[in-house]
Amino acid sequence: MSIPNEALSKLLQEIEARAISSQQQMGITKAQITAKQREIRLLELTSKEVGALPKDTKVYEGVGKMFVGVPINTVDKRMSTETTELKNEITGLEKKLNYFEMTNKNSRENLEQILKSGRA
Image (cartoon, rainbow, N blue to C red; front, top):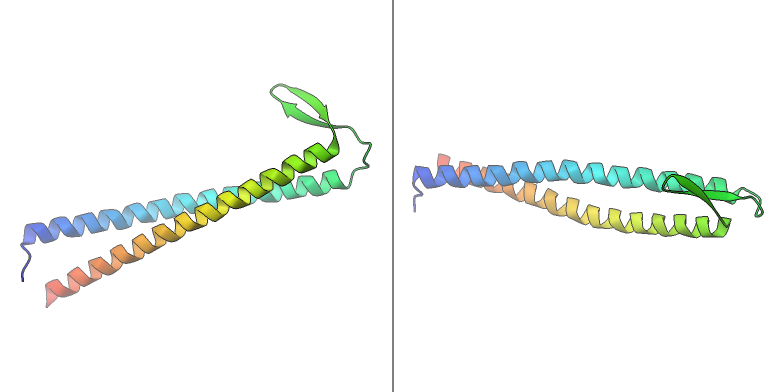
């Protein structure tokens, strides 16, 4: 069974567009993962510094254009919660990255199959 050249050309363009799109999405997702990991490192460093302070030290958090005094344990709980949320987001982004990698791989394989069958 032979596919007309116009249909084959259109099919190749669609597959290549899908592969390019998935590559772009992979780059974006990797950048998002890197940013989240950087935020986690910053939170962990801050938590370590706050944990080294005496318990009676006054700690302030920024709220808009002002600072409000809060207990150290509240700050520590908030940072712990944020770290957990960021780790969950990274897990989701890694699944998304895996999907884009598979899409890219499948698109490339489909392109190769079509090109090989066209030569035969």
